[in-house]
Image (cartoon, rainbow, N blue to C red; front, side):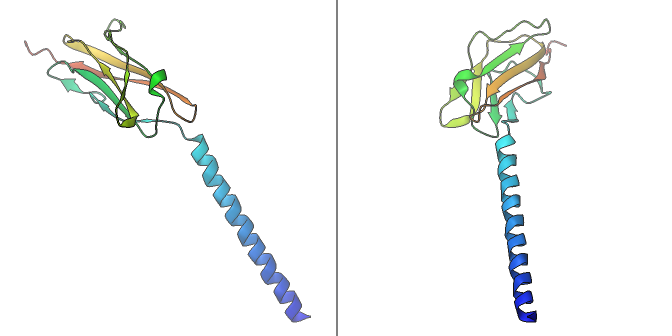
Length: 136
């Protein structure tokens, strides 16, 4: 009788351990599903103070994005979009998008972006940089 009860306790412990492991794995999977693309690097960088106009803005994300649906604008101090081109996919890098820029005058600028990650989540944000006046 004691041996049978001991075996039942071992089986119950193993089943509880297995159930706990299944729940743990499911929680890990849910966190992965809830993840969104996030900006990990930019050129020019956030809060950069540049001595000359950048030729482009490039944004890198932590996961692949749908570049065809990306929106990137560079706004001047008057909130006017100074970029005339459309953002483009970066060849061989599905996590990046690039926007060509015309020559910019000294002042403050804001990069405003909206991208669609491949999991269907839209991510939008902005950051600023400035171009110093070298005449001073």
